[in-house]
Image (cartoon, rainbow, N blue to C red; front, side, top):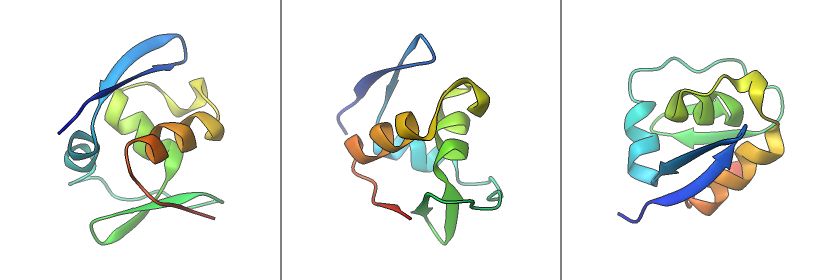
Length: 79
């Protein structure tokens, strides 16, 4: 699966859809405030997903960044 490189909070990270899905396998979803993405059987807040997948605290980036990363990786983001 093709990896894509993103700059998040000044750090370059390489991700692919499978790596994000694997990172979320055993993570309980936080409460969704607005934007969510379905991974497996759960709906996760998009910032939680990007934070867990990259190790970058969610406070370090905005939802727009998470939205861009996830949609470019092929996820459908819901409002």
